[in-house]
Amino acid sequence: MKRIPVIHLARVLRVLVLAVLVMNILCLLLVPGIVAYVSDGGPAALAQAAQAELQAWLGREAETHFPMLAVFLGAWPAVWTRLDTALLTLFYWLCGGCTAVILWQAKGVLDTILTQTPFLRANAGALKRAAVCCWVISGAALVRLVLWLWSEGNVWPLFTYTALFIPAFFMGGLLFLVMSALFRQAAELKEDQDLTI
Image: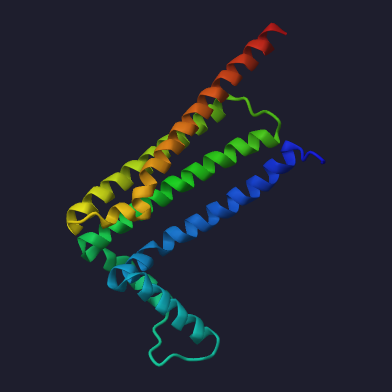
């Protein structure tokens, strides 16, 4: 079996990270519209509206057609009129912003791998920033879960993705912190070796 060089894997991963980063930023722009649809009728309302929009684009005009783009643009001021939609929008934006920062830090680390200088203190700092972003997402999910449990009055919110975010991103932050320490230690060893030569 042929071994694939790390540089080739890093190139592929960098392209994927950049693609996900662009999609993440585009999704951040759509958050108010998604929140408006979901809060007014649940995910089924969003799916039904998307299906009607698709039928309209394919030429089969729906009986009542209101373009989703207009709804998404109109949702920007509308989500701030209710507390639940405002908090949900802020939660999604906070998580999406932190995800963008994590992806940007990953891009920076991959750039140094591509230049074959991965053991830098800058990479340790980038991984530490990614760890902090993971913990911010975990904390925001915890706050959202507590508020959701309080408003629902039952345990149903414990079986949602929000409850899953808490341990997943907390452990992700710990992993990034360990990797940051490893990169920092490798950078220190490399600096010592360079000084002795």
